[in-house]
Length: 153
Image (cartoon, rainbow, N blue to C red):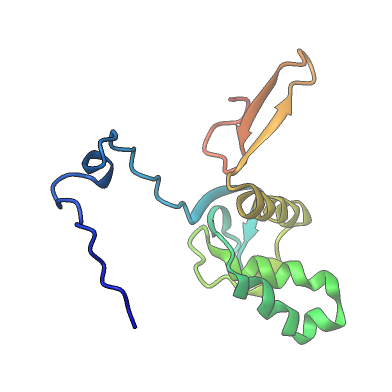
């Protein structure tokens, strides 16, 4: 037997907090699922064009599980990061079909950058990193997504 809900819903014109006598709370921030980045060196495609900017999206549970069934990963566990990174890259420059072969052709420093970027946006929820100036020892944050010119903070 179900109980009938006898509570009166607040008016549609006033937020529930206002109906309860409280002040309206700020709207929750929209979830950011895509993060732009700039590669340290850049992906060089078959025509010789260098692509440095790109977009990575947040990973899903499926993104982390499916590579475990890949035969290349079973043979060589180091290949896991190649398959995983290729699943979450939306684009690199004008290349929108980012597959493991594209990731294999990245320079090692760019792959390391993307692995760290993946960890930051999926575990920490942002693309900022705390750094310390080696000259003056001042601490500040930089955005690994890039966008600024070299030497700017």
